[in-house]
Length: 74
Image (cartoon, rainbow, N blue to C red; front, side, top):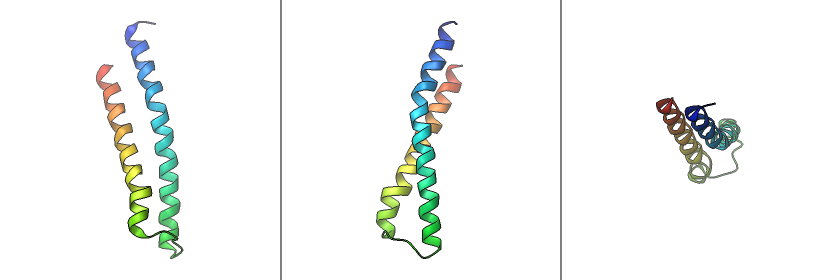
């Protein structure tokens, strides 16, 4: 194992928690959107966007950024 393999492994381990967070946020977003479409929403739309959809978009952006950084170093 050379230095580049070690660096890639470290970057992969750093990205993994963000991938898990993004996956959980996507699942929550899908469930909230489903409730909204079924007219069973229990949160105000502005609160829902701020609390659910915005963090999902941010986590997705971070995962995408970290993935591209890993591709550049390979």
